[in-house]
Image (tube, rainbow, N blue to C red; front, side):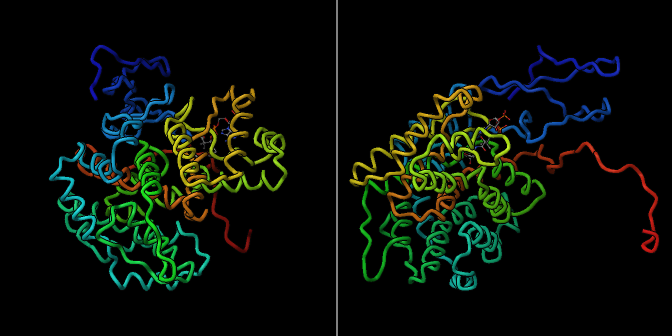
Length: 431
Ligand code: CMC
């Protein structure tokens, strides 16, 4: 990031000119620095939903929504998804470079070592109702980690790498244990001989009466999905992690807040909503027109889940990779899912409809991911937990970057007040 000395923006307000510095990113992003605007002019900016607000400088993820480009630390998502292990990508996001053999072995060793949960924490699961939403459990459990591993409250910058590794390791144990508890099944502990994704699948699906076969093609599909979800610059949950972290809160509590933001159906919860929508269309005799019309009807809150994106105005590159992975996995497992055909037909109809064309609405990362999760046996209410497992290294990397940046300030937007002007207080007897 550099200040572009050759360029300034001139703003004229109340007959006076104000010069605002222009800053540029390494990939040519242009921004007008308005940080002194209120002080110098008495005016603030108003940007509901932050459609046009850069909240930070970041060197982690590059996203070009017009050309459908996504890169982590400069590497193309297509290449990372094809060639890397998820934990390699996690390391890349957090540390800024791909790990060499020694770094990778050390990271793997710690991930194995940290995989257990403190046994006291396991009792927490007994006190959630059986139908408690897994995202709520995940957020509570991650928040609770700071009580058992308080190193982050002592010296966050010193201990971040250890806490990050601990969290990446334990989150899959928490996720799998919450699933087992919801079924009333015995917990399956992590195994040192299995890799990150294989271990997670085994903890989810192994049963004393029916040992789980960890199939490499299933492990590969989960690995790819986690990589594709690993970071996406300043989305809603990541901005939440940063906002909470900017107040000086520890890593676990900040990530817990991010998990809650991800839960929403407009964000990570869309993967569950997509499958619910496809099932509804299926049950309705594949009446596509009805659902397309509903999505276009402004008086109807229904939207086509898994379609549209704040930044992408073309195909979401993650969606393209997931679609291919979905076809590959279903054919390898010899599964025919009617929802896949419905999704394909719905996509085709939407992409040829003027409403979707004019608004540049394309399938996003959530449109096909649920079909892969179904094929693997992940229950629908765990889909967003899978997203959280993937997004975790991105949240950590963004939190770390923010904490290490000496220019960081507490996040504190302003508002345009639209309430009552001053009123005299009325005692209760006179109201
Ligand atoms: N179905 C129907 N209309 C839509 C949709 C949709 N899925 N998405 C956007 N629109 C319309 C919207 O009504 C608006 O129309 P108009 O200009 O006539 O008012 C126009 O397209 C622009 O949409 P917007 O709501 O202003 O866009 P946004 O950037 O504020 O919202 C979004 C982005 C992702 C929340 C939205 O597209 C959406 O609700 N999609 C469905 C939920 C979804 O799939 N979310 C996952 C996003 S990707 C993964 C992630 O971030 O977690």
